Image (cartoon, rainbow, N blue to C red; front, side, top):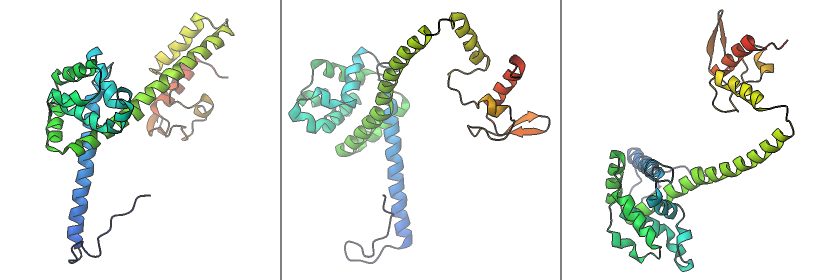
Length: 259
């Protein structure tokens, strides 16, 4: 539960209560701070994502920096893990040119981590990243530490864990696919190619498209499973089906008889 913003009945100094205009000004200032925080975190995530192993600037030299920034606990001794957020911020400061390389010499880290941080610092940055680092440099160390932690946690939760789950699911899917195909030898390569051609003809790149089933499409009602946009289908008729639904319906009429 989030508490609503309220004016203090009496100010801390015992003075008069804030006026409505003063209260609105404080709320506006707070909102701008939240918005700037979100902008800084998103731009920091954008810079970091380019450094991932398969990113635009990612390589073997940046791998250690990427892994340390996201999960520094794996690099630290047990006694130092409580300082992981602080060490993450120190590494960011060096890589972004806000501190000298010797700043991180106090961290118990492998030699290759220091080389990775130095390598990241030598990479060219975009204009957006340059302005971001200028803003971060003007902030206090504690503020940069919160921003760095928020960016790292977002990437771990939304990208890293998602990618790991995808890999596990893909491995399981490949096992199930192999068993399914071995039990149906009549569905050979030719049949699979013809099936894939249907999706290519519909310009569908994935096998789970947002297209209604034919049982629903053939009724011609405005009840698309996917709440599609309202489109013109001709003969004075409009439909709420998505564009792919209509395209699929025309494909079925042209290519397949369902009678």
